[in-house]
Length: 346
Image (cartoon, rainbow, N blue to C red; front, side, top):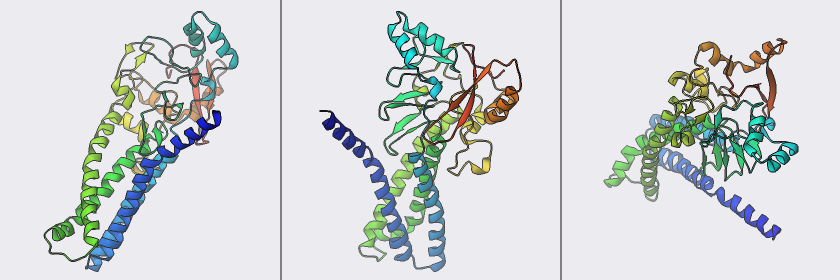
């Protein structure tokens, strides 16, 4: 029975890659249709041909690069310090009031949010106290940092470490499809009115225009919604239900630091890298400043947390402990943990 279930699970994992294969097939076909059929076989003017091919490859590379970064980058695993030890799990199972056990554990961790029933956010599947903004993904079967949603088109969760790549995937997909639609428009009109010659290549150009304009228009809606979420510092899950904080209760604006700071939190301070799928997001995915913590000095702590730790390490009377986070990207970050119930950047 166990072997049969393993086979079923492998088949399900294979099926999950089907949407990615669909996108990959469409992209490969669009490359052939645009470069070979349109530019090489249909466009007569050499200057126009070179310009089309040059700009097409710029949009193509940025689109494919962003797409694969979204697929291959882990949104971030939960740090080991949030996992319950065997002793903690035993105490939790034997306790008459499990939440009191979780409260004791949570006091040592940088958690500022609760469930809607005002209890510690705990995952019974992963046996972890959930960091702020993290959630359990039933598809990935694990908890993810700042989980936004699970996207079947990339077969991956979109979360803290790959959210910027997901936004750029949408943005560059729009530029890619819009460029194709605009440059094929005149040839589409000629074919549609039976002026152009081209034989079997006509169908490629017709479908290329229809598919590119359809994807360009539909993706604008999705990108527009996520741009709004970025400006208010909210994930898709948080937009459906307001976050409950230890201090202040439910507040859908709790993480909102102002549009500029919210954008910097996702894209980083180096604006020349905003349009490139290179990791520049600010923070560690565990600790987040709240709306009241919006002074420049406090916001800088997110981007300079390594320097902050070095300086605080020299202070003998500080009340911080150090937590090392380990995730699938094999990049090690460190976060500051303060012992009281509410973590601030004092």
